Image 1 (tube, rainbow, N blue to C red):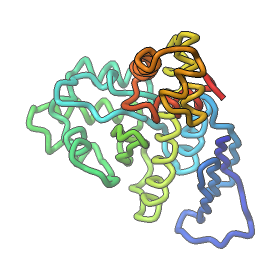
Image 2: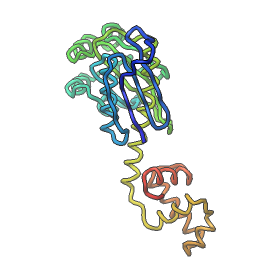
Image 3: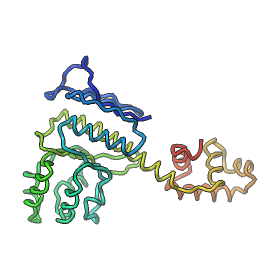
Image 4: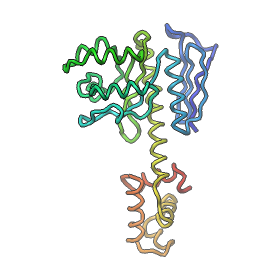
Length: 267
């Protein structure tokens, strides 16, 4: 079970200029103590939980909003196509794409190359554009008070690359805040990826025979042993397992079994 808790812990020492934070993060829980005492407690079982957690995190650090995105390829020209989760105003995304701003963005270009967090300032970064659209960018970001912020490159356990952005009109984040946001954003992105993968797996329609083969594969049975148990040929067992692997978008039998278990298809 995943939980995000943002809560006040008075006995923790103050360790940053904004009041100090305490982190406790493991496989099933994330606890954050921000300086403002804001409290959030969410079970990380749905995308809505991730959204509320990110909203609380943004608020705790003085940002206006957040955006979770996959790193766009060079053939991607619309920010909306790369956005996974955000509370940035819809008119911002629409305006950004209508002005065709992605192609000349130095921020997007840096995301494709960077593996470490970095800050942005629209007044500074827009001067680096070569397409003459700097003024459009500045106006768009100022309209929604997203003038400054941070991008955190992240990846999940499957190797998918993304970024978590926080924007607002506060001062630039400190090195300590950057480390903290890098730590938390990576965990939340991975959990979001897990939830989406589970949703996709649950949507895959496996036949009774495919589920039976996966069940016995999870029990450690070999192909020959499964064939004897199910009164099938080795070829037919492999056929069902290979078909299940394709349906669950896996690379091998082991990953297929793991996905099926996590999605509750077998137990």
